[in-house]
Image (cartoon, rainbow, N blue to C red; front, side, top):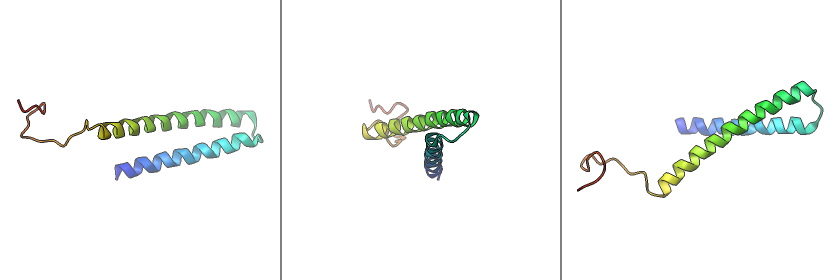
Length: 81
């Protein structure tokens, strides 16, 4: 369920970021509002990039076989020697 919440949060961030871009591209906002939206957009973009980087690293770990199921018979370091 936590994965779904993260995905929903990410999607909500992207949707809000798109709203901000649309508003700024419209050019009808006062300067103060434009600056505030720009700052909010930077924060959302940064948070989204961080989430994507974490997801990319998780996928890399799984696809490169670095993550293994725990086997109590193997010992602490996973070495059978």
